[in-house]
Image (cartoon, rainbow, N blue to C red; front, side):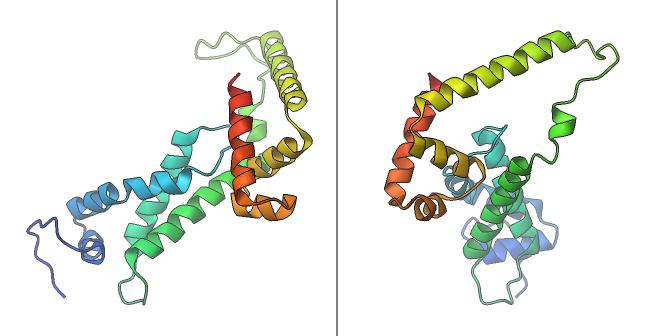
Length: 188
């Protein structure tokens, strides 16, 4: 099927993917706009250690772009299904990498030399900041029930609500409720 360059908003996702594969940036942009809501929905249930929800949405968008660029219309799968798989895989990879702490030595290192680029954090300030962070974590652990502590640990490791529910022997709704309570306690 050969599609013309003429822009039509009623093109199917698969047709837009074909145009994007031919280098049509408008088709790619149209797909990104169509799937913005899906990327946010896929990112919503997850938590990224050391990041925020916008970081996860950005990772989801990278997954969507990968789906747009790698979709094969010859396979027996819709673009939406393929996109959702790519988006969720990208989110899980980001969570796993963050939980592994692979870049922690770089992110948390303290230079021996005087700070460059106008940074005013001395080793003493960094040490005090680290102590304050540990103190906040200790207060949070005291505020959380044992179940909430276990759920938070699994959540930070990137497990889905369903996986956590299986591990703690509770329904997914209980896990969701616990995560909401944890978020409120963290916000205090």
